[in-house]
Length: 108
Image (cartoon, one colour):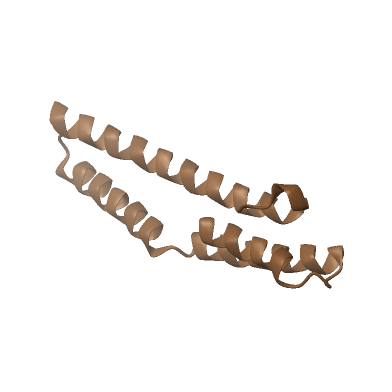
């Protein structure tokens, strides 16, 4: 996410001659690329597959001990939190192109 922010800030800083619309268009394109990278992440895909496999194995065995059930619930909770975190990151990147930096707001 910080890489996407830096790239969008660079667009503003790089060429003072760009119109506001051109800057917005370039920041939107950078945000779209960052979102696509998030959605294509192998880490998230692998985590989902691991949870599905663990749940299928548990269901196949037909019995669950209290400890396995608790671990499965914790895994599902962690996956939900992970997906919520990814969605928050995607949302933050998506809203960033609409923000413009005033000269007094630039980082030193």
